[in-house]
Image (cartoon, rainbow over all chains, first blue to last red; front, side, top):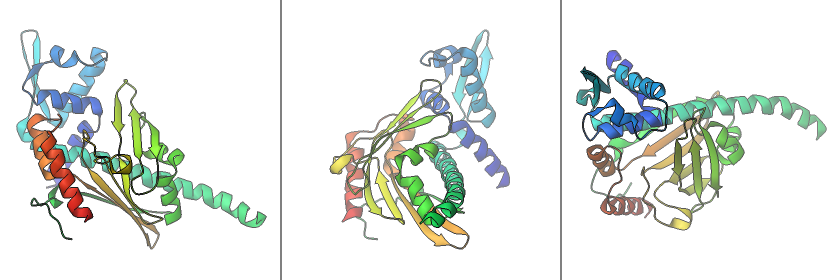
Length: 122
Length: 161
């Protein structure tokens, strides 16, 4: 279970980025060469390869090289598509809630220091 | 709750809960003042533009996010319930004044805030229709047909009744 959770965290991280989600979307149609995958993205190839390596380390995709062509494919068992989609949504909302909490706590601290002054002036 | 929808939807609900060490008023402000909301809405270095924020049932809630690589995410929607200082519900399936939408991502979200020792209990419940989720997997990220949207609207209307 703990192991499964660690893997989920990697998958959350992998899917937290819109470019990587688009790559997963493209691979949903079947295996694809790196150059074909990269073509629609207005991004330098090294940046694109970084995204691929994050996906590959998380186990969401795998790749193999034949001659000079590297081909990527989804790993069906990494998570079922349903789980992956929900994981993506959860990752986005967990992160958003963390940001909300941090922001509000900072806001409150600022209010406390300003509020004291305001109380006196009223 | 009475529900006209025949499929159980709870399986796709995301419930995210945080104890925020600040009073409810501060949390409400962060959510309802666009200048504050845009500070936390999306992960940096992405930035948020609040295109519409009309805080009333049927009022537009439209955010537009921009990424460092030129990526964008356009998220129109509207509020469906506003209870000051305690509850906010919004959806991507309706635009301003209840005009139906066919969003790229169908969801409704209910945000609640309640006093709790040490601060405020913040709970976000995000609901996705079962059917759209299944369909999305078959197509991995592509739009669903009209039927799905109509199903969602029916389910949604059923909940509103």
